[in-house]
Amino acid sequence: MKTFGPTCGTVIGSSHLFCCSLPIDMLASSPSYPDIMKLAHINLVARDAEALAAFYVDVLRCEHLREPRALSGERVSRGNGIANSQIYSIWLKFPELDRPFLEIHEHKVTYDRDQPRVNEPGFAHLSFQLKDISGILSQIIQAGGAQIGEITDLGTEEKPLLIAYARDPEGNILELEQT
Image (cartoon, rainbow, N blue to C red; front, top):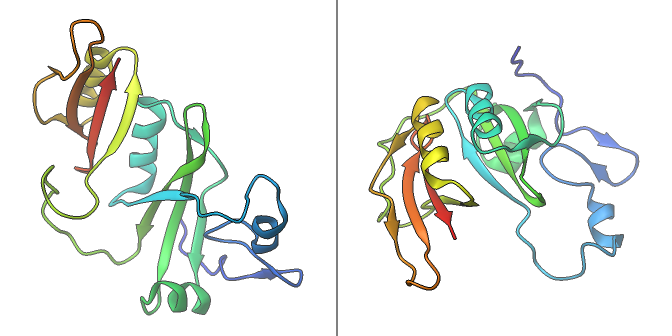
C-alpha cells in the first residue's frame, strides 16, 4: 500500500542523510566511489509507481534494490523545489548491474504531458541489451507497452545488431538491442 508520509529528510547520526541517495560519508570514504563523477541513478516519474516497477521487474528482469519509501517533509521540498512535496519512491537494480539504478517516483501531485518522441530534445530513452529482441518485445506489448518501430538490423553481415524501440506502459521510450 502506498503511503505519502514524512519518512525522508531524517538525519541519522551526524552526517548520514538517507532518502534519495547513499549516505554522504560513504560516498566520500568508500574506495568503490573514487573522486570522479559517476552516474548514480535514472529517475522515471510514474502515474502508478508500483505498476511501472512491476513492468520493469517482470519484463526487463530488474530487481528491487530496497523497500519502497515515502519521501516528504521540509528537506524534500527544499531539495526538489516543490512545496509540500510527497513522493512514493521505488529503487530497482538493472540486471547484472548495481549502479546506476532505476528510481521510480510517484508524486502525490503530478502534471501530465504528451508522450515523448524519440527525436525530442532532453531525456530520450533507456536502452537494454538482450538476447531475444522479439521475445522481449512481445512481453512488453503483453504487459501494456507498445512497439514504436520495426526490428531493424543496424549491424553488418559479420556482426548483426538488431534494434527496436518500444514504450513501457506509461509511455517512456525503451531501446532494445540484440547483438
